[in-house]
Image 1 (cartoon, one colour):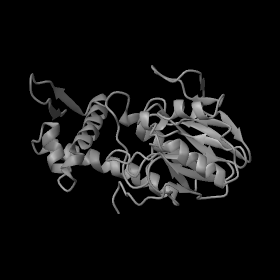
Image 2 (spheres, one colour):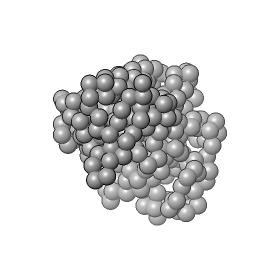
Image 3 (tube, rainbow, N blue to C red):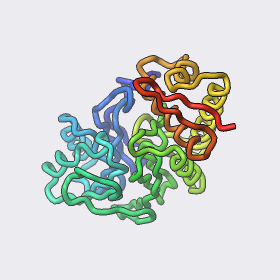
Image 4 (tube, rainbow, N blue to C red):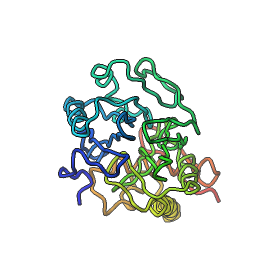
Length: 284
């Protein structure tokens, strides 16, 4: 199945407490699009808002009407990236006075009147309780949300359904990301509702797969350096030889995030080269 998966349903009701409305923004980085979730019963919490695509609010309204609901009671956001909060202004225009909350951290240019949401804070809905879990790495302000009634976790971009997560160079940190993944293993989680792709029934198993995948990539990078491949493009060409070239730019970000982590640990060293890719070496 393609990661983008144009046949992915635009709406779904995976449980009595959870509905899903797709953000209608498919792409190489978003897969079939951003999942937004309605959590609860008659007055559900809306988790994430999509990217602001014109067709999203009518799709959401049709789903609400089909469930016999008028509107969400509030909006909570996993993190600052555009495909998760880009629909805030549209939803505020449609649902006047709806409160919006996220973790306020290193933010600039946010929509007005965003409430601050902190690690461990509970968000109460109709028949549902979400607990915010700070999980930096993909973004410094990233929150997952634990659904107490289902022992389920909304993972945002920390764990995806069908791909791995990019660690952006500007606000990402692979060391923080690995710590966040291990923190998720300490939670009593069964099912995962990711921000992209289908529901993950074996939540802990997928988190362990993610940890092992990152450790494997780290070993591959260290082996490549040991074999004399000293630039990121060289490493990407070898490590991602079986991956579409269209994804090599994202792969280069992943390699760069690993190298930054290894450099902080004192295991590799960067040599900046003018008008050419940096050269990396192992610290012996």
